[in-house]
Length: 464
Image (tube, rainbow, N blue to C red; front, side):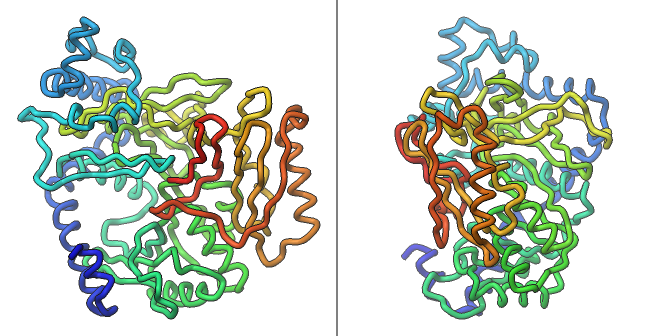
């Protein structure tokens, strides 16, 4: 019998014990002495000069490319076919001699990307996975050192904001820790080893929200971490029930946070959330500093930005921390807007103004023009609980809206005005309608897409 099936049959106290046991196992493996050494090294590089951090990145890149060319079937054949010597790739710019790698190519045969060399074998049984923004999954080998390094990069960012490793955490993400049949609290389980309370996002609604808020308040924890769509939903319920929850930290992951979501969190929890950009493949990472800017973690991965249009760039990355499964110039499918202004905090790394979501997160007009940054349509609509843009064909969109308690005709009028305003001169190329729904569909892992479209891809993307 599968262990998840066994877990589902256990009474609540034993489920808490099982969650704690798993938390202990992961904590022991992730946060051991090697992790603390890696974290210390990351913190040491925190204020290196830009030239020094770039030199460090390129040194890692050179060794990683040589390793990939020697031990990975795909790259051994690629370098031979292109008549390129791995030693010729000495910097981020030199990587442009190689073609862009798509997720589809990797999925077609993951075994061709697994290293057979002594420098990068996967630890027994250590397999990572990502479900992907279009529901296209990827499973790949990793090493425990690679996992610890990724957590070290993430914890460096959290330390910037004053968090510590022993801070109790309220977690509201996509983990299914409570049976769907459960109708009464507790809608949460306790990981005592990891000092976490794992809340079920799938049971959160207007009826159950007071129980969530009461337990969070009773716990005394000051840190809430989760998906923006779920955390903002809790924030809306807190405001609706006039049960604000005062926290010191709210950290977000896995999705882009929309402006109205950030404002709801600030009002409900008394703190502006912080965020970082990353993914399971570890090909890129950027951390938001206390000044609100995203700094590319140059010492973690080799990140490239390819111009798309205007100030929008496509994000490619090379995962120099995982020798078990090298990915060179891997297309994340994500887009970003860069800034040359730097940051007052003085930290190194290129600065990203904001992440614009995935290439699929664009609306396409009848003439093929791509419109992005449409999340601002909902920026001042505080009575909109959740929203999503659905496009089934070029030139036609539906705005799916989950109304808050105070939503009325004035809000709808403003929504229509903002939509026309944001579409701007393209208004004759876009037809839109509004569809009021009770809830928005999420992926299997609980994530919410802002734009769901098949105008480019030929199928409606509903995954995370």
